[in-house]
Image 1 (cartoon, rainbow, N blue to C red):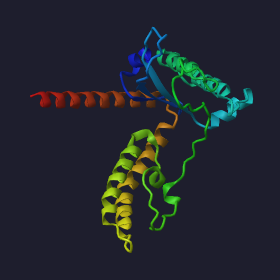
Image 2 (cartoon, one colour):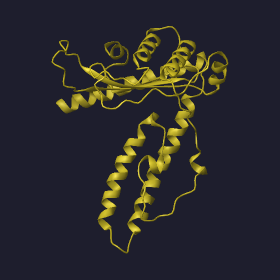
Image 3 (tube, rainbow, N blue to C red):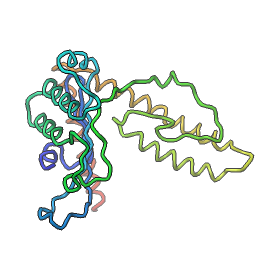
Image 4 (tube, rainbow, N blue to C red):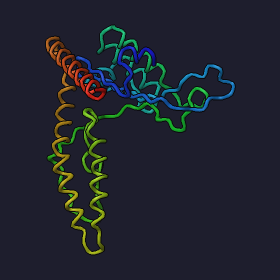
Length: 248
């Protein structure tokens, strides 16, 4: 984790973009776990979520060389490492990604000392599908109401899904104050507001996902990296200005 923090900074979640349509996503949480009495190191425990995405056409190339067993975490991990070595340049970040995937359990862990978590999701390879939101029929208002991803699933790339889900819960709780046995018009009002608020975010997240999944040439990488640097400088500037104003 020290190596990851050195590269990414002390952040909860981080996404890196490759030049050939691949990307990585890592989310870490510091878990306050009560240490065993014989654990003299007393090291902090982190739980990490690792995701590696890549264009599906690369599977056709890879499977001709090596067969990947989607039900075997070890086979999937080796497949991911091969792709990282192929698609990423030889650098410190690439070495870190390979090291992190080496740490992923290749079987369901049963050691309560090394893996002191109650739940564990085995490494799997899943096909990501795009569904045109405009091709889906709208549902009819009834006593069954939807919110969050059930109503407006979107790519997590912009972090808008959770924000909209929280707003859905707030709006729905306010709407439920108008409930009567013979009147559910408040559900229609909630759904109308929710659709107006979230539709643009669904399309925006979808468009951004398409853009970052498109392979970039050397010139495109230079433009993208410089744009991200400018955005980072602006974020740091506004953060510094806010802290300065708040202190004064």
